[in-house]
Image 1: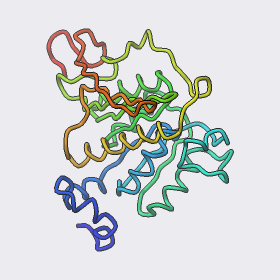
Image 2: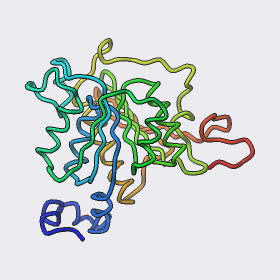
Image 3: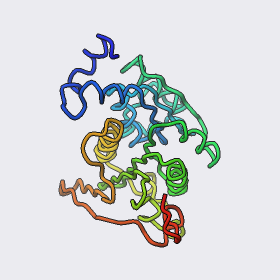
Length: 253
């Protein structure tokens, strides 16, 4: 049962018919893993903590640099040189002290990530490199955990969600692991509100997935172009030769 404090704190969400008290309880009971506490992970973590997600596990091996502050809003000028997971934890607890926050200041290998994801409700991929994205895809598919994926560079961003259910695509259906090259903000630049926009959308998808509200962006790649303020969608399907989610004997799950 929700306490009087929780009923008041989350009242604006509970008013939504798609959330209600039952959905809010699911949010409070949820455990979300956030990989990357940079431009995307900042709004994801802030909004999920504010929404009442009961447990957040923050995964990042980096420290706060002054160049991060233009877009990584979970950190502050005073947190320079702090571990990003520690800086983020401090900000999140100020926002919602009832949220349990675990931190991992390391880049996890596949076995450790698998053990973490197995215990979670879902994963938000806020990383900045393809190797991590492909690893998360494999692990989430293995444990059938939803994966909310975001990316942004320059003035552009993209978002998609994977439920890892039979006959649905995974990240490997969308991108070829052998032909994917990392593109960094350090080399190409980024406008801060773009990662904010995509991160907010990731948080929204995560809340929907937890509470079973609405439809997730499954099989849809949402593209955002800030320069002309436009959104577009590309539909995609499971690949018959996907080495992660498709099996040739027809058993896809």
